[in-house]
Image 1 (tube, rainbow, N blue to C red):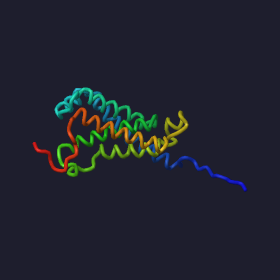
Image 2 (tube, helix red, strand yellow):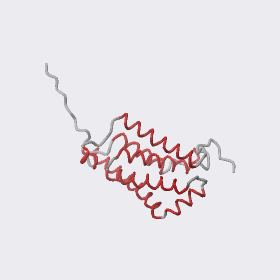
Image 3 (cartoon, rainbow, N blue to C red):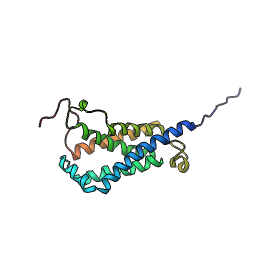
Image 4 (cartoon, rainbow, N blue to C red):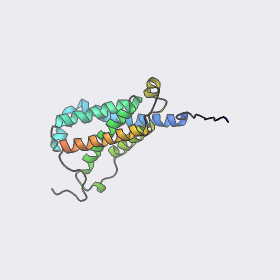
Length: 178
């Protein structure tokens, strides 16, 4: 009795093209957001300071680095799981900034929310064959366990950053009082 196993390719050409398109969209958006902050860093610091953040320069540096480096990583598909983790962390906090001033359901699911979910999708699917990860490292995705771990790390980093540097709970069921 002979057992044969058909080994299917990890992804198909259409899937790889779709992943490339998703990586370009999210990577370019994150890179742009990070570079805007980098080239006008003082404004980023002022925004965080006026919003009540402790250590606003440190917070601005963290979000600038996460968006810029995460954007580059996603754009080129290099160290994609780590890039996605950075983007998830930055975007969860960006989403929290948007919803912290009102009841959280009163704001639409906005760009940071969508970017975080797109990064999470790339975390689980991998970068695809058209990526530096595949060409240099020979693999375009990590195990499910590693993907879940990096997702938890990204969200946890956002929560810890928010609590440590902002000191408030961004989720409100009613509008915060004055």
